[in-house]
Image (cartoon, rainbow, N blue to C red; front, top):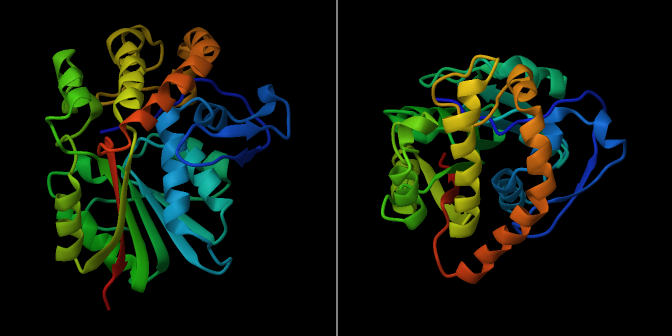
Length: 300
């Protein structure tokens, strides 16, 4: 059920982001690179996480400093996304349905990250003005239960944003994944994802009224990510000195990161090429992306 895109670790201080659209973020360091936490360094080299951040920032808009916000994840999170969302403003709480990334996430953030249950989030009713769920629903046999929980903890009229992989199994990159053995089970998923109509219906059934939607990560980015995930699952994970859990498609802890340090250094050298090739997605603007996002408002 887990997948964290993480490779290299260090300790130290934060740095500043500046970016536009859903292209890879340009990072301007305020400290030396080798003093930056490994989670943030990985964020700088992960195409889809950077795209997701830009899309979420667009959906969120300005956040008042007294607004209460929640980010819910399911293992595919090392804390970097939390770190940057917190910089947008508001008072944030964190929860994850998996346990083994939580300690290192908490260390990075300096905040408690709660270990949540799929049937009950550890927060009182109507606690939050804004709630974000990132890639949770595809891990669950019954995604309705967690959606009901998102409704419960959101204030009436509050914002709920849900992202999931696109569940369209006819898309070319999905068929290519299956052809090379990267099935949903390899990703720790019980379903490929949800298509936009399915996600809208699920939210409506749980009294969250959809009001805006978007997609990102088209064919070229998805293919590039597949090469990285395939290399880890089929080669690197089998040689890892640190234990790798079933369903992990990338390193998730400091020890796992250490085991692929040399590989990450090589990847860092070719990353600019990956970032450039990812821009070819712009040629496919008329297609639906491989990640879908629906924003809604909790009904009273």
